[in-house]
Image (cartoon, rainbow, N blue to C red; front, side, top):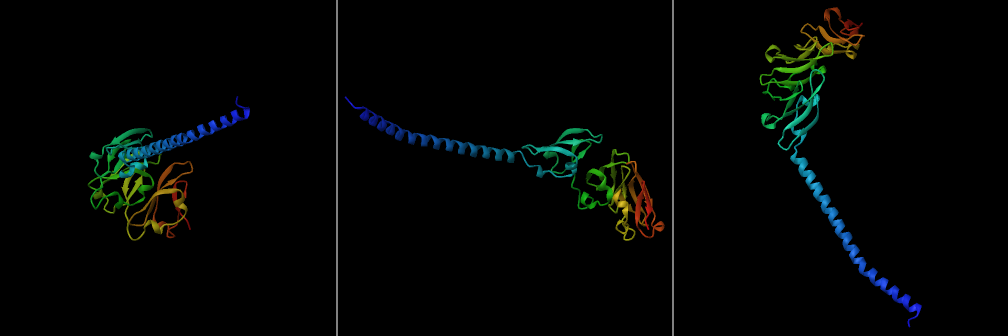
Length: 250
């Protein structure tokens, strides 16, 4: 008959044997788990990167549509999709296929994406200067250099307007109550020679060949008024805004 001491010694030895056998199995299971996680992670990253590249990049598309469109995406075929603002303030979902716009330049025309032409070496958007950019959006030019934009009127509404290059050889445009107008440049009487506080509450600022200053100035009630100040009536060339009217500051 075995003694209690011998029994417990044998039991201890058996536990040690079982523990030693289980350790490699646990290590192998952990290794397999790590490999599975690594493979899954690598596969997920690879698939995600592949899908991201296949879906295209918004950076392929440029143009003024970015000023008034949101939720911009491009699918694997290069089709541009966006939610674009209409002239009445509502939004419309629109798309533009890459094959219909090889320039990859888009503009928002009343809630619809359309192709914006690059234009020739003359007449493109970059060559149009002037104050119209202060209150116009969705700007584009066509192959003939005609400038088109949605411009804000004094009542706050937006109006689609165009200005032909042949009617504005200076290629300087301004916004007159929602309508694009030609601003003249000239070496004398330019905007830079007019100073004063009017700049704080006036926009769409321009001067003509005689140095007359013209701008849309905000009234005390929040509305805007088109106003002009002749150079001959303000030799100091310092202007202020008094309730929507330009006046000469001494």
